[in-house]
Amino acid sequence: MKLYYSPGACSLSPHIALREAGIRFDLVKAALQTHTLADGSDYYQVTAKGQVPLLELDDGTRLSEGPAILQYIADHAPGCGLAPEAGTMERYRVQEWLNFVTSELHKGFSPLFNPKMPQEAKEIFAARLKDKFAWVDSKLEGSDYLMGKKFSIADCYLFTISNWAAGLGIDLGGFKNVEAYRARMAARPAVQDAMKAEGLLK
Image: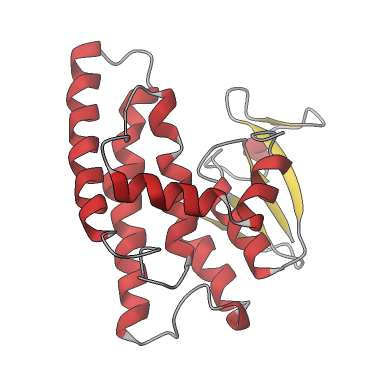
């Protein structure tokens, strides 16, 4: 199994999940600005989307889109409890969180990475993101993770996306539950191992 990734990008979330699940895999770094791999080959020849993450299975099948990859990982390591059983309300709650993170937070950050976006517009998007994080903060009250006391694939995704805030000038320090959650996540061995492997931690 191979995970195509770019350091610190949204591909960090399935990277964490793979380590949490104890699944053996190889990391393949993709430079998103040039769309090339370490050997100089064209990443577009691997995936027409040119984006990460991309999971390549041992039979050559490739799966894209972070939330889909996360659910695949959870379903292929059921003993790790990364997602509740399919068909249960708890499973739909995890999917609810994955959809919220991908649509409201992940895509909410996209304009802030665009150098052509006017500063005034960036401030509007940043304010919207803070409103979304305020809501997340309220949902984390009294909870260790998004699903209460139980860690799930949704946490891999939220932690990854929330990592972008500081570098883009969005202060999450006023959200005590989010801050405690991020510290809890950062202390997990799988998270530390994934970040070290991507060069994000020494």
